[in-house]
Image (cartoon, rainbow, N blue to C red):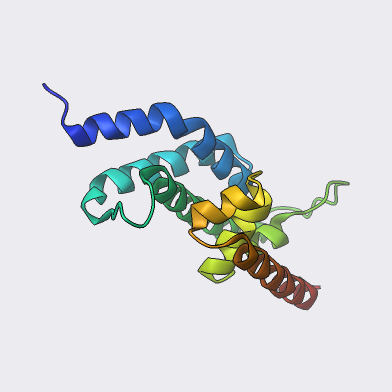
Length: 161
């Protein structure tokens, strides 16, 4: 069976971008199994919806990065929801580790632009210029969105305590 141009394009994308996609998903999910699920789901969605990809706005890798972030946050929300349900069935463990779950839940609940700014501009390891390019905005706009997102996170987390 001969590969189509679309198949070749996605094969090249996977060869070139998989480590970056895995790193991005891992920064959100902190779990290799969930990362694999997010990457697989993102690539399948991108392949299935390739006809909606508009090359004029962003490169294919940027588009797939955004899909990966969205899939990662969907998995995180699902995992946090399941953990909440299970809390009633398990004893409370008071370990000495820092609980990042409220922060990750708060990030997942941010509006899309703010969540993307935090994810790409802070959590991803990209520098400001690269993060802004991925998001298709200026670095100044990125930093403004990060500032607003941090304010929203502070408010949300202070209300939980």
